Picture 1 (cartoon, one colour):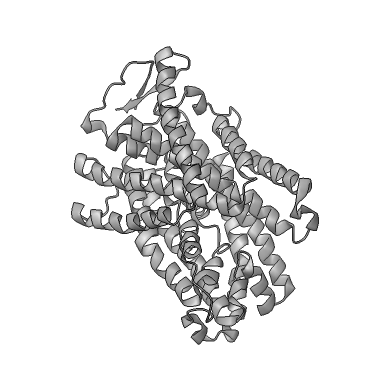
Picture 2: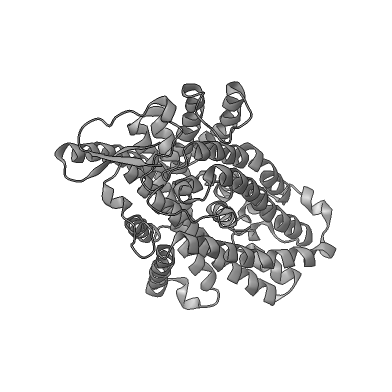
Length: 471
């Protein structure tokens, strides 16, 4: 095997023939050993998406037990499974760092690739910022001084820096840490669900909620969306996975089942065993329910699990953001220095540093604004991703796809239209603040693409040609 990496300045990069389109387009594939195996990849996907049932409670507050249960039963089929299937097909066809950026670039050209990269990167780092805040929200119940003021700000800053340093120590370490964090953070919910069995009254599952309580569909759909999205984030790590064309489909299959079960079992247990005012079903209510079902010891265990889950979520999603920048450098969208790796840990330290700095700035927004802004930008990126998937099936029907969704083009269009309609709904119910923030970020993303092309013309930085040919 050999590889040719070409650097260019303002010239148009050479086009890769269709016969080579299925090859990995990343400069990292042959330079560094791949370290992620099946089990760590499953748990990284799990933490990209869920990290446990923490945060599902507002669905009950918004629409009552029945709609919450139906939401977590049905939503995976119209959203999670299609997104996971698309990720499996395109990650095995293009197993390089960059993931969805590669797909959009291959389908519609460099502008759409850059726009996809900007939308997904910004939504990722905005989403990451929620997790140190979530850690402190649980810790303040034990240390009241962390509720507000400078102690809270310092705690958020220190926790963010410490978690980022762990990420810097290596993706393999992060992967195995995700396995440990996943098992430990889920264990109290297994215990709670078992203890709750004798106390369950099945008629509570079919309750539409308290009479007189208005349904909050914005909160309901945002809760479902936030808890069950980001399946494609793991695609940016494809260049770091052993045998990605075999490993990715299996890892995604197991992760989808694992994630759905981890949400549904505790939700069935608590809604069936506990009868409280609907307004109490806010984030963190599972800990309160654990105390009602088993005692304070289980409440504290769940709170510890919540902190561990937030750590796992942070690590998995920071890895995706950092390796996305590395992949974008390989593709020539950003300067080569974004592809620099630590000599000791082999991690993209420039991407980790930039992601961390943005995360620190965003972490002082309110939790609701963080989630809403991340959802909107992610929705824009997903609409482009669905379009890229359909167009690549039409444009390159002969592309080597080790995993191929067993559907023809009309069926694939229908499969993508259903979640696309939901994405439009999520954007339609956004607030004016979210529209403003997302609009400004999109304008900034377009300006960034123009500026990077200007830098290439002036030769201010070195850029990769965006093409690596492996024979």
